[in-house]
Length: 419
Image (cartoon, rainbow, N blue to C red):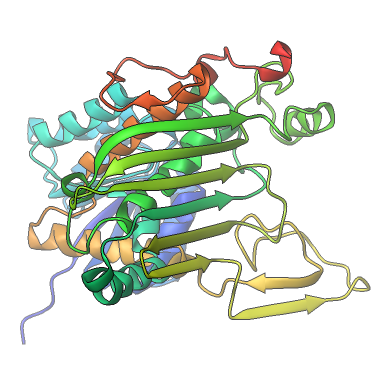
């Protein structure tokens, strides 16, 4: 029998999200990790060793030069997992190598959010399509099994007789990021709205759209109304704690990013009916750990999902001394008491199915359904939400937003100073 062909994948970025992707790859059949790149060679070597240890790659090369990584003849597709403020330069380097003929790639997949502004996101899309590459937007939540199965069931059992769904709610909440650059609005592009509402708005668009249909073809954006706030980390005690924990972070008493955001996105669907995505995100939630919750409501049906409603829990009494860690749930906040256990986070959060879908499409020469066009639209919706929060009004989604930069990202937003 002929040997089975697999896609050679290079990961650019060896941080927290890179580790998630490597763990998820144990469920990917159509691709192998053949290279890892990072700004520091030691980090690349560590993640490459983890890929080899878990059996998701062999002879995994480590690089601290992106151009050198994509010129590796075994690398046929690249996953870009670098911090937000570095991503555009990484894409410029990769596409320049491809256009020059020095690199032979089939496709590129880019982590969320695609850009810190609409202009940045559009430039990345233009660079990638200009290089003739297939492209994917790495939005893991639209591949989460709980979401995809619920979506499929309601659209097959409820929508045909009762009508299409009209309200999607999505929330992502935890106690805050793990890296300094996330906390600094200039490098992140904002705060929790940029960091996590990109997930929630795309999950909401997905839920409101029939299976197999592009949300852009089914949902016409109308307007956005949003609120942002600095609830926890701008307080004196927590601002000091933040600076102690993350050297180089800005003083949140003077230059905060929002740690809470709520937005209502209004659309008209393909049936001509008004529909709504309601999104809530927070860096000020203190519970067991990361909480992702979703709801979809229609005329005679509904679904709900919460990642902390787990199949397994453990109890550890106060008499046990425990080391801090994240072995039970991402962003874990306690090691005692009754704690939920997310047994396979990469599967539950959608990374496994996401990477399987991307590698399968690239290997077949097909454009993934979750494309960079989706990523550009998500950034446009986020910028409209920031503008609404700044102006205190609903923002018409026909308004131009390409040149808009949130006040948070400019370091000009401090609601505590304005009181």
